[in-house]
Amino acid sequence: MTLRHGIHEIWLVLLLLLGAAAFSSARAGVRVLHQEPAHYPGIARVARLEGRVEVSVVVATTGNVTSVRVINASHPFFRQPAKLAAWLSRFSPAVLNGVAVVDSVHLSFEFSNDPDEIALGTIWERDSREQEIDLVRDQV
Image (cartoon, rainbow, N blue to C red):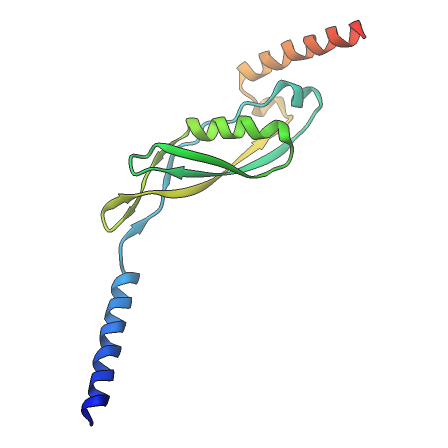
């Protein structure tokens, strides 16, 4: 075995060890502690719209939300309620080797026209919106 061949073997072993250490690092992603339900917009209910919004949420090392970005929305009416619900949700930060790190997580919000899936406050809001729209129609 030549000295040059031996050095290559040593470098190969070092690279393998470093790579194994990088892959064995303890990592836990962002955990969702509470996903706030999205408020169903009254105007969307009157139009009988249903849909889904997917958002990306950046979570700080403290677990606080630092930004929310809509990835996909089936209708523009659902974008803001989904973003607000994401801001109001609670998270545990991602952890890498025992240290909290900034990371992101994706959330999905479903908007259904089924009254059984809607909070009571939303139903009341819907009723008042329907009355407002009926008033506008009567005036036209």
